[in-house]
Length: 272
Length: 253
Ligand SMILES: Nc1ncnc2c1ncn2[C@@H]1O[C@H](COP(=O)(O)OP(=O)(O)O)[C@@H](O)[C@H]1O
Ligand SMILES: [Mg+2]
Image 1 (cartoon, each protein chain N blue to C red):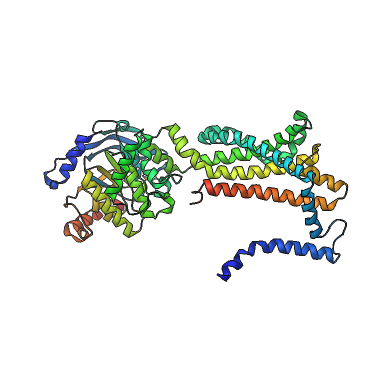
Image 2 (image 1 turned 90 degrees about the vertical axis):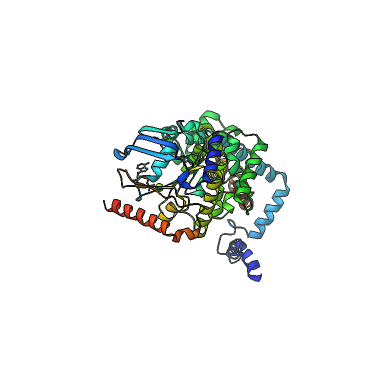
């Protein structure tokens, strides 16, 4: 467990962005990946900063999910190295939130047991499991009944359960692949606020794939703009608007300017 | 409220129509009276025959044979099916064999089983078991193979190893398809047991009773036995549907 690092990160979250020293958390070097002989990534390098939120944005099919899945170990790389603070993936606790919450939860388990699954699987004693789940319930201010089965909950509630499950083992990195795209706008706003709250409390490193520019910019400290395949970094944009950001932030000139800039880069890359 | 009550009566309209047509056809002499007794006589015979020992013995022995065949088929078919489904290459290597025997009417194998087991109860159970086994195995294997990819990835990213994924995800994912296999399997077992009772020498069983009644033109008893066989098949199917609803509560959701 990287407790000291997390406490530091939590403390750092209170500091103005400019004063925070940026430490690299995830280092990707010389990454190669091809599908059916067609190269997707060629000699690709990337640094993801510790205790920050990075959004990945780019044209459809450019390899956003593939990149994240390779980092999270869900897809093998052809070659290259991916290190977490110098450690391998095996030595690192990660959380992953899927777009398809319905297909990611276990419908034969009650929602609360879904959340407890990664803890029990890791052999945590039952009183500790209970305590950790209670803690999550309190920090998410859950109003609905977690003793229901996932299919009895609304889409937003199910995605909330997914996020709680991913956070349960106190991951060092939380990966989210299009977490909002199966939700309606109201639920998107709600989950976005929750994620920001969790981030401000815990300072966990987050990587979010999004195809919606507003979602991508809203939560991000950095936006990784990707080109069409073979995929390169078009721009690794910094967005240091202070937190907490609110729905009003979306009309803030800094937000509007960042979005417009990202859109410019995107248009240029798509037109090629 | 009134429309609700009326709707609940819809399912009994079919059976009432069925008995009405039967009754009228007999009453107006549209069918041969020797071959078609009236429905009232048949149903009355059904109840009196149940009072006597013979019918009870026949129902019990058919039920027992079907049940034994089914339990054997399930006990072998589900584990093997789940294991094959977990390894796609293992399944592919026996897929043709399974599909071939699944497409072969099991009744075509009765003479073969006669050679092996002779005219015994074991023979009837063995062949019914074999037929049910194939369909149960096939469904369990497909249940595992069609497991949601996302769920497997979710378990993997939470650090589960292959064995944990197998017991925490694959087995559960396969359950609703497995139940389809069990339900189909018990129906097939009943069909084969009835056929076997008819054509492989037998002293008891509904199949034996039906063909005996036919030989001596005891048509009332033949119809009563057919109705009881139908009821047995229907109730077995219903029992599995209810079990599925109770235990696989997430199915189709
Ligand atoms: N398993 C696979 N086999 C072949 N091609 C794939 C596979 N997975 C992804 N691809 C291809 O790789 C590209 C990137 O996919 P993906 O990472 O899902 O894109 P994104 O998430 O950016 O929309 C797409 O062109 C897709 O067709
Ligand atoms: Mg994607």
